Image: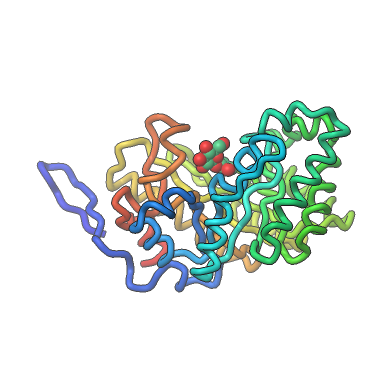
Length: 327
Ligand code: 9MR
């Protein structure tokens, strides 16, 4: 890492090139990034870094219900198809994201009566999973179904179908592509806490009932304003003990802007702890970041005053966090 002193202020300067060995080649975990089809098509430098450094891609928005069927019966697979084609061409795996989520859910779905919703949900899952059968390594089947206190989030699916919808959607997804690994995905479940306890209990119950659930996706949206999640490794390990995989699916570490060397060092430490913990637990199979460049990140839109959450800066120069993972 290079630190120069300009006008009395220490400024971190990124070296121009990434490390000589790409991130994907220094680990036996899948190492991925969320990707947007538009930038993939329009920005060759973005595409080049993604292609070089990663071997998994997760469509950031292109496979969500609100994208693929915003209007009932009118499908738009263009973005999803483009990302899957790119992944095949560049020998990357794909994490499908996400089949059942209360957010980015079209209004027409939310308005359906219970009996109709069940059939529509089944069709949605079957259609989407079959379309990419054999091309998706892992699916985020259900996303963010718990509250922070470990109770179930009160979504339209729960209100109209009851908690049993979770088992149903895993069975439908498995029927559509028996080869894909099926995950439950959520945020704030990195450490041991009431929410991850609830995920643990549910997954254990579903496995006992024979429901085809293979893994737990731990999103990994962190902020340096809070401490690193407690008992992260113990949390990964307890899922391994009940026979499921884990994956870090959406890692980023936001910083109160502007970044400075001390904040970037803390960010690097958080990324490093996420990475090391995943490598320390055998069933943690994937480390995926939610975007790889500060040029395109959801963070500043949602958390005003915070940003710079990715491994590469706006100019695609690797940051200290990148060198923490790939020294
Ligand atoms: O990064 C995604 C952003 O572009 C979308 O506008 C947003 C819509 O809610 O979803 C973001 O991705 C989310 C992901 O799908 C699920 N976990 C949290 C992510 C960040 O909000």
